[in-house]
Image (tube, rainbow, N blue to C red; front, side):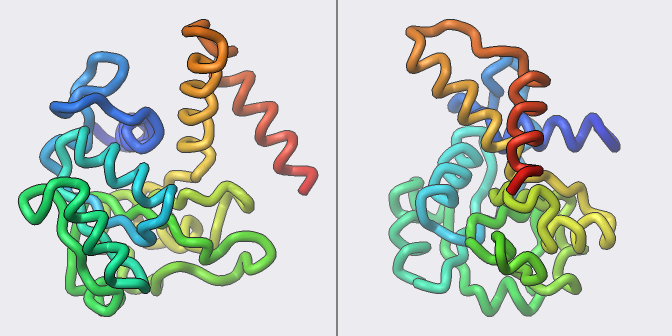
Length: 193
């Protein structure tokens, strides 16, 4: 995969909660199968990303300023064969390379839009960078990732995937509105903030 295809594949994998065994909800093999994913922040969003990545067949590295949160999440995910905690220091020094970096920290969220969760110099160690934030949609992290040649993935993708699944749950399995309609609605709303 290359270019937009790779971006779309990573975005689907990040947002869809891929099924165990590495297949996506659409029956295709997840681009995360056999890959490595670093998750910064081990709260709710970080845990969801990590669980989805493990179920898609990725090896997950977890970093959090509260080391015990990363260690506990690694255990819940299945231990060192599938997930391990790493120090933020190791990540910040650029000593780790992976396919995907996922930010699930509040760094860069409005109103602190000029901050980033990690130094720009570290970003070439990753093919794709997902920022779970969607306000702003283009965080400083995503701008830096694009400038360093990474595939930037907005938190909007994760938000849309969650919205579609919630719609199905709340309506007894009905199909949600088209993704393009939901995207337009959300983008229009966010642009008013």
